[in-house]
Structures are given as C-alpha cells and as structure tokens.
Amino acid sequence: MRCAPTAGAALVLCAATAGLLSAQGRPAPPEPPRFASWDEVNVLAHGLLQLGHGLRDHVERTRGQLDKLERRLGVCGGRAACEEPEGAAASLRPPQTLPSAAPEAAPDALQSLQTQIRAQNSRIEQLFQKVAQQQRHLEKQQLRIQKLQSQVGLLAPVHLKHGVAKPARKKRLPKMDQLGGPAHNVSLLHRLPRDCQELFENGERQSGLFQIQPQGSPPFLVNCKMTSDGGWTVIQRRQDGSVDFNQSWEAYKNGFGDPRGEFWLGLEKIHRIMGDQDSNLAVQLQDWEGDTESLQFLVHLGGEDTAYSLRLPAPLASKLGATGVDLSLPFSTWDQDHDLLGNKNCAKSLSGGWWFGTCGHSNLNGQYFRTIPRQRQQRKKGIFWKTWRGRYYPLQATTMSIQPRVAAAS
Image (cartoon, rainbow, N blue to C red):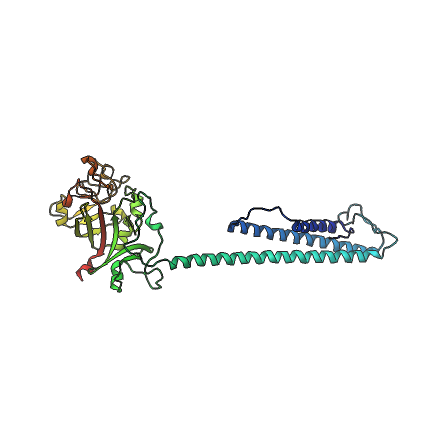
C-alpha cells in the first residue's frame, strides 16, 4: 500500500492502517486448535467493536482537519504561505510546505488525500458492520443452544419405572428443591394438580414422578404411588443407606435426597400438601428377613410456627405414652431440639430428624445399618418402630406416604 506524504494527520492514519493490513496478511505461527468459550468470543466481539469505534472517530477528526486546511488554502488563493499568528494553526499545517513554483498542485493533492480518507473510512465502516453482524450471529447461536438444551430435557424418558438403578452408596445427593428431571405432566399447559390424589381423580393410574403445585406453593417434583385406594404422595423412603439422614433443621425443612431413591420430601412441602386438614399417613416397614408391615394413621401437620407438630389421635397417642387425649409431637433435629424431654436431645442421642416425643417409640430417619450391630447402645440409633420389631431392631426399608382424608372416605 502506498501513501501520499502531503498531510501529517493523513500520514499517521495511513501508516496505522497499512500496519494493520500487513499484520493481517502475515502468517501466524501454528498453534494447537482450541475451542473458544462463549465468554471469550463475546469479549473478542466487544473488543472489535471498540476498535471500529476508535478508528471511525480518528477518521472523523482527520477529515475535519483536512476540511479546515482546504478552506485555508482557498482563502490564501493557492499561495505557499499565509499571514497568521504563530502556532495558531500549527496542528493543521502539513510538515512540508507546498512548492511556490507549483501552487496549482495544492487542490490536486488535497483531492487525492480526501479520496484516500474516504476509502479508509469506507473500509473501517465495513469492518464495523461485519463485527456487529458477527455479534448478532453469536447471540442468535446462543439462543439456539439454550432452546436445544430445553428440548433435550423434554426428550428424556417421561416415566421412571421401579427398575431404575439405585444411586451409588454413601453418595451425598442435592436438595429436593434443586432437583429437576423428567415428569409425566411436565409439559401440561393447564393448572398443575395439588397432589397425587388429584392426579388420580383426573384419570392417572400409573405410579411415577409428577409435578404438583399445592395452594400457595411453587411447583415441585413428587413420587406418586397409585393404588386402588387413590393417589398417595410419597414423602420418605429408606432402602440402601445411600443418603445421610443425619441432617440439620434447614435440610429437613426443604428436603434432600433423590425421589427416585432415598429421600425426604421436606417438612414445608409436606405441610403445603396436607394444608390445614387431616390426612392419612401410611407407613410401610420391612425387616431383614423380608417380612413387611403396613400401618395407617389419621394425622394433622402444623406449620413451622408449631415446629411442624404432628397431631396424633388418642388411640395412637396411647401407644406412645399419652392416655385418652390427642398427642402433638414437634419435629426435632440435632440443631433444633423440640422433643418432649427437657434434659435430653433425642436427635443427638439417636440420629436423624423425627417427631421423637420421648425418644423411644419410633425413628424412621435413624442411622442405616446394613448389618445389625452387636452393641445395644448402637442399635437404638438405627431405624426402628418399637411396636413392630422393637426399639433395638434396625429395619431394612421404610416408606411414608400421605393422602387427603376425603380420598379414603369417598
């Protein structure tokens, strides 16, 4: 590229542009291939935009200086010099004065410079438009990627059978409110059901994972068990010891584990499902010999202001030590002690969080033992239901489910 040495500002712009073009044409040393991340591409695009803005501003300033120089030469009538205060237009004066013998060459030189400036300005404007176009293209690609990711999530299996592989042992799983995954009704456009019983009433007869939305609650995922008696919402499952149930109050409030394996749904979610009405609580127990026991109670669960107290009717309360009256048992964890013993923290003495009462009647969230410990003191920290296999027999598996009372009555 050749540049006319007639105007200083134009020479500076011409040299800078020529250096940029020559650098673009110079072969770069070979580098190993690397895929740029979206953030890196975005930063590069913004950098090129800033470069385009800077070059365009520089051209505009140079064009203004040339316009001033052209007007001065027109006033001087093509003479080599004009009367002017020293330094008043030093920034506009070319580094070499025009030859006095050929004053008619000045307009031609100016016209050549203006042509070059217009050409450079046009190229910079094209570069700026290309960079803006690439940035818009990258933004569209990002939107397409996000759309494809959401479609891939919807293409996952919409139903999970009981034969799904169990999670790895001793693996800590995310909280229930952070879990996402496939559900039967994930794409339904109408209002989500309040619970599994409403799903049953709407004609659903297959057990699995569903999205529900109780009144006053955001939607969340639950495991529904459909039986001839209606739809039951599973709120707890123990089966292999893959989840640590010795959790804090906050964890028991929000829920933890995986609804496809071992999990605790969460006290707040359970309270939202049950509302202010009595509900049926079904408990399934299994020992290490393969024997099972099914129990069902009518219960009422209070809110967090009552420490999620579980109210039991008098017949059931009598088995837990109360005589002839309803019994209300607050929920306790190792960091929030609400049990009925003033001098002992049942959650610390045993394990897990539970409606302990006086520590010795039941604890389905206790420590999971794959073999029965020899020491009696250790066995009482396990999963037990005293009225079935005794306090010192750690159970193998448990499941807890709830259903509105009106469903069983219908």
